[in-house]
Length: 215
Length: 305
Image (tube, rainbow over all chains, first blue to last red; front, side):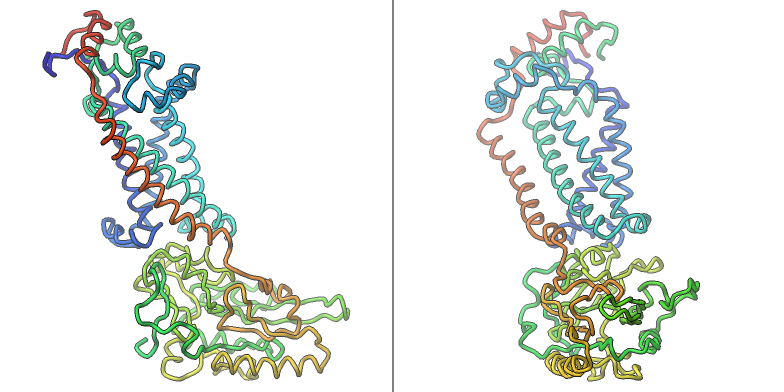
């Protein structure tokens, strides 16, 4: 059975994929510009944005794009990311999951516990980042907070930024390690085999739900 | 300045190669004797004039402070306080010339992300380099004295330079030169400390038993010092920070352990991913999975062409 003849299951609509990639591009730009202003050894990255002043000016605007873009993802996916008892079992068998053996864990719906933690982690961090970011966006909001509040905000912003970058690494690594995942965000589909292996409960639901046939 | 050597600069590890440490050359200092100040604002005017700055015309709200705060154009400001001395019952008119303190351990320099935007010369002067400044305002957060101001027009940070351009050619700062009562003196830090002791002795003899020098050790001492008649209460001088002033611990945390731990965590995550992949290998969908998946779908959907 060659690749082209494998049955495909639809995982993401065009809208969801577009929403995801706008978020992804903003997040990468934010990570690069943020790190450039965070650690002096990375200051050279500001050249990618046309110098230090431009980096400083652009970073918050990209943050606004990311916030609203992520808000879109949040409302699309929050229900599917609610924690349930299967997630606890998945977490309990994390060691076998990490070895690539998912036979011990219960059948998983659209998202497993790891994906849910990425979702909620990013949600909390992005909320903290936009809030602390506005506090230190001196160009427009300098007058609204005290310097002491800005000091706390700049520390919170740095810590949350590091957290978001770390989660992003986990997210990207998982997509690479678990082969066959990336097509979900490029073509919008995964193979039935992929769904069977990693999200069997979701595959069964899709099979029952003939109203939304895959392409 | 060509005649000054840089000891430290922002966002640069280990300072400048070959530079003399701060203490090995003579440090300069400005001594502001608050007890001799008559509040004439000649220093403010001289500062504007020498540095070719213009302050916008403000609004009189019934106080002497003009402008109302330091600005990107007003690098020094007379701050007036009407203080009711509870010990004597006398109303005292306290006047403090505010401006950059030129800390030996500058919070602005520590916070600055742009290499070389803030420099400290070996004589102790802390100076902003406009060309490298990106206008982020981190210096404002780093400064324990609330001194730097960001210009809305140029989006750069400004503050007193201690007239580095004058000092480098052997002159004193413009404010010191203009002061009609010699409330502002300039020289080596050692000279200024000696002068301060003479003034403190005089003030003490005249009943100011708490007269003293303001050279806060928490920031390594400053290169702008005050003689205060109430050195035990610096706060009464328009909220001058106490003698224990230091760089905010939040700023130290941000620019210290967070920087190293943060980069470490990111690097660890990336390396952990690579190592995991090397050990476990790709998590591939097997032929068995595909067949079971197909069965699960039960032929209810069309296969892709």
